[in-house]
Amino acid sequence: MSKLNENKVKAGGDVELKDKVVAINRVVKTTKGGRTFSFSALVVVGDGNGVVGQGLGKAKEVQEAIAKGIDDAKKNLVKVPIMHGTIPHEQLAKAGAAKILIKPAAHGAGVIAGGSMRAVLESAGITDVLAKSLGSANPHNVVKATIKALTLLREPIQVSKTRRIKLSKVFNG
Image (cartoon, rainbow, N blue to C red; front, side, top):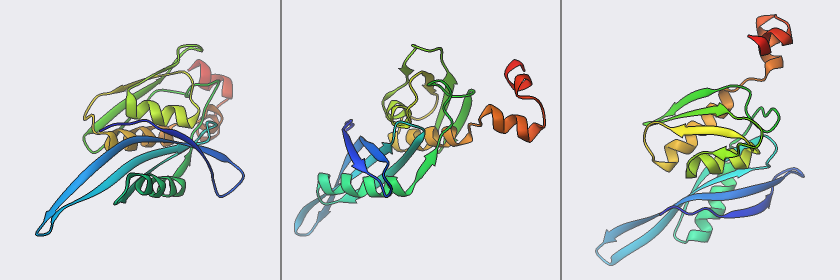
C-alpha cells in the first residue's frame, strides 16, 4: 500500500521541514486470541533547500507510526549539494537489491522519477533531475539508495580543492 502525504513540521531549529509518507505497510500477527494489526510507515522529510532525511515508524495505529517515522527521519538528516535546481553530476548508488541512477537535467525538465525516488528528490528541493530505478522497486531500499546517491554528490568547489585544480577546469573537464 503506497501513499504520498505532505505536511509541514518544525525541526529542532527554526527550519521548517515538510514530510511525505512514502509507504504504509499493515502487518498482521495471528495469535491464540485472534489477529493483531500493526502498521509501519516510511517517511521522508526535507526543507526543500538541500536537507533531506528518511525514517521508519512502527505502531499499532497509522497516525502514531507516521509520527514515529517523522521523528526518526529528523534524526537522519543529510545535506545535499544543489546547483541551479539540479544536481552537480550523475551518480549511481545501491542499497540492498535497489539500484538507482540520478542525472542532472536542464532547467524546466522537472523531476522525472518514480514514486519513492520522487518523494526524496522533491523533499530535498531538487527541481530538475532525471532518475531511474534499475533494480528492486521495494520503496524502503529505493529511498535508502536515493539518499545514499545524494550524499555521494560533490560540489565543483569541493572537487577543485581536493584535486588542486582551477574551478574552470572542473566544469570544462
